[in-house]
Amino acid sequence: MLSKKPLLLVCLLLSFAAHSQTAFPLKISADKRHLTDQKNVPFLYVSDSGWRLFTNLTEAEAKEYLLKRKSQGFNTIHVMLTAFPGDKNRQGQEPFENNDFLKTNEAYFRHVDRIVAMADSLNLLLAVAPLWYSCCNDGWGSNPQQFMRRNGKEKCYLFGQFVGNRYKKYNNIVWIIGGDNDPFEYLEEVRQLARGLKQASPQQLLTYHAASTHSSTDVWPANESWLDFSMVYSYFRGFPKAWNKVQPDVYEVSYAEHRKHPVRPFVLGESTYEGEHEAMGSALQARKQAWWAVLSGACGHSYGSPFWKGDAQWRTYLDLPGANTLRHLNALLATFDWTTLVPDVSGELLTKGNEKYATNDYATAALTRDRKLAVVYVPSARGLTVNTALLTGKLLIPTWYNPRTGERRNAGRYPVGYKMLFESPDANDWVLVLKVEN
Image 1: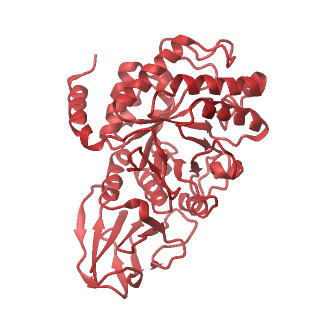
Image 2: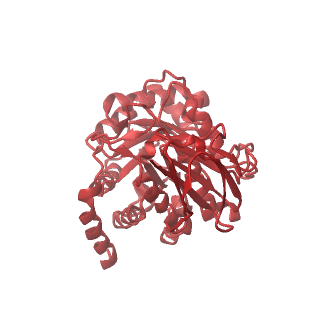
C-alpha cells in the first residue's frame, strides 16, 4: 500500500495538471529543431534513465518512482521494454519463451501495459527501447548468443509490428531503437524492427540510441524514413571508463549535430550518471551536461543515476543533489521562448571566458533569434567578456541565475553596445542571463 505522502503528492500533481498537461503524441516542430505536442506547445525533453523500471519494480513501486520524478520536473522516462536476455520481472516472468521474439509472454506484457497506462495517467512520456542492443555482450544485439541474428530479420520486423500494435493506443510513447551501440552486422535486423514498429504505429516518434560518441544520424543515412529525431551520447574528454576511450564533450557532439542537414530535432540521450564513477559522477557534472546540451542546440537532455539498475537501494538514488537541481534549468527556460535559442558556436557573443575548448570546464552560450536575450552557462569561477553589441535594444539587464537553487542576483543596468566584463559570483557554476529592453 502506498504511504500517505505519495497520495498527497498525487493530489498536488492532479491540481496542477490542468495547467501543464502535454497533449501527446509528440510531433516534430515546423522548423524541425524541437518537439511539440498536438497543440504546438514546445516540449522540453527532460528524461530520467529508468531503464529497468518494467522488470525490477513492482507496480506500486513504479507508481512511487513515477510520482517522485514528476515532482522533480522530469517529464520523460527512458525504459527498456524487454531488459536484458534472461531478466525477469518481480513476478518471475520473462518477455519471451526461449528468447523467441514471436513467443511473447502475455503475463509479462500485461504488467508492462499497466505501468504504461500509469505513466499516461500522470502525463509522463515513456521513451521505450523494444530490444536493447547493448555495448557489453549482455543485450539482444551484442550478446555472444546472437539473439537478433538467430531470430532473423522477419521475426525482428514482426516483433516491431507486435509492439507497435499493442502500444499504439498510448500517445505517451516514443521509441528508442538500438541501445548503447551502433547497429554493425545487425543493421538489417535493427532496421526491420524499426520499420515494423513504425508501420504499426506511425504517430509515435522513433529515435536511435547509438554507441557513446555517436549520434543517431552518425550511424543511419539521412534518408532513413523511420528515424524522426536524433540522440547524441558522450561523456567528456579524459573520461576513462567508457569502452570508447576518446570521448568528446557534450557540447562538442551537440554543436556537430546542430550543424547537420537535413535538420532533425535532437536530445542528449545519455551521458555521465550521477552517483557513478566516483567524483566524475558529481551533481555538477549532471548540471553541466544538461546546460551544455540545451545551449548547444538540443531540445532536451537525459539524466542518469544508479537507479537504472533497479536494485534494493533504488529509493536512495532519487534524491541525489543533481537530480533535484535540474528543475531550475526547466524553470529558467519556462520564462522565455527557449526554442529560439541559437548556439554561440563561433564565439561572437562570449568573446572571452569560455576557457579551453574540448575540456570539461567550457562555458557555453546561446542567443535568441530576436537578439533580445542571451544565456551563458559557466561551470566554474571566471570573468566573462560579452559582446553586447549583438543584442538588439537599448538597456541591458543582466542577472546571475543560480542553477543549484534558482536564486537570482541582479547585476545592474547598462547601455547596450559594448564589450562588457562580468565576474561570476563565486567558485560554483552559474548562469548569466542577459535581457534587453528598448
